[in-house]
Length: 151
Image 1 (cartoon, rainbow, N blue to C red):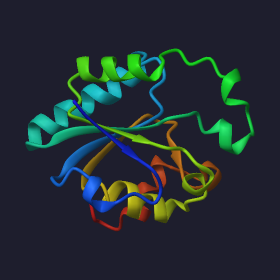
Image 2 (image 1 turned 90 degrees about the horizontal axis):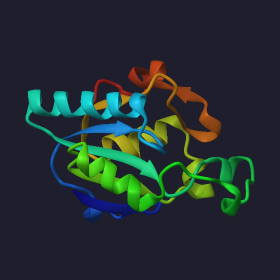
Image 3 (image 1 turned 45 degrees about the horizontal axis):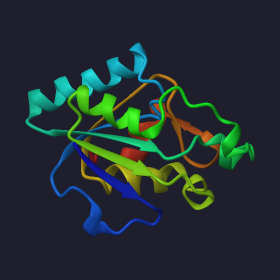
């Protein structure tokens, strides 16, 4: 599995150049729901001949949005264990985004433009409760609006 660390704004040359299936989520612990998201992405990738990527964050968004002390958060799976679990599930590319105030301030459209279209995603897979954009204002139901038929 290739790990690509991204800091907003990222450099385009860091991005995997081919179309991908992109699974979105924090994926702490890789529980059954997370496994379902990733195995769905794998199945779609196999059907369409696409590599599977997971995009996650280096810290929980609450550190930025709620000023939670990073040292107080108990992650179910530390980062290295998360990488191991993702690799065991057959993920090809792991995008690890530095969750900064600037990244957290992206509008839903900016997030879709830069972190979905910009990562060459052709299919998106996420859990029912995945949100994106400044203050989590958009959910998966709104994705077609921001996608504008680009994936």
